[in-house]
Image (cartoon, rainbow, N blue to C red; front, side):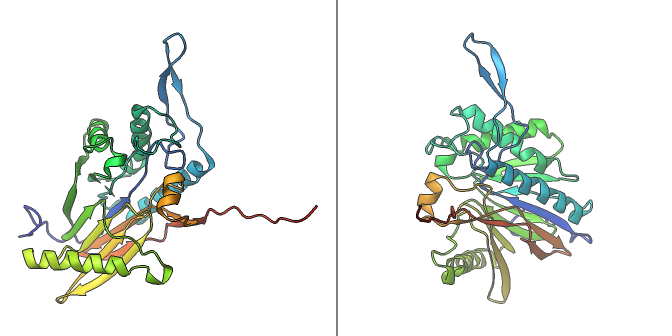
Length: 299
């Protein structure tokens, strides 16, 4: 019996894939938004009309990353079952509002909904799980995630869709522990991964003490930086994956990251085969240097 769930599925003879996406921050002008998004507004006479926000250059870049990566995942999976997980912060929220596409809460929800459509339209998606994010990005009490979960269930009735604060999903015999918050990526380049390893060891030891075994994979988001760390504790191996965001910069992000000029964006994917984690695909991550470069000279 699987200690994390009610049933232990037999190891799948074929591969299964878990696309990982996080921190899409729908509604922010530097975060993911579909070019097809339409928002309903009212004109000066009280009549409803459709407003189609124009994508910023950064949003165009992020949308290209999303669609290009989904094409590659679909090709790689080749019809295999897909179990995508979003690890939180679906919308920007109403705490940091200076760079919103529109001020309405409904606009953020619509933008986030449209951004997820390519993920759920991939062939053979079996389920979709969402981890509840930071309160400042949820309109408190996970309101944004709960609303989006309900709307997505209506739009995709054949897909098993739900949201949790902290979940453990058994996929192809592999236990995947997922939540939004986790360790930092490290404040210095030469320390990158140290905090992640300490965090991973702690997670593994807690699960070993309580259940006799750790989860096979621990998935986290929030820090907008990709990290993959693998560790052995008491003869058992686990992998920690911190997924990069789908957001580029912004006033609050610049402050929180102490003006880190490089930003990484993208989707990762777990490849599971024969009851084991075969590979963590991170080859689709894009890293950009956002510094303005110029040559100054005297007149």
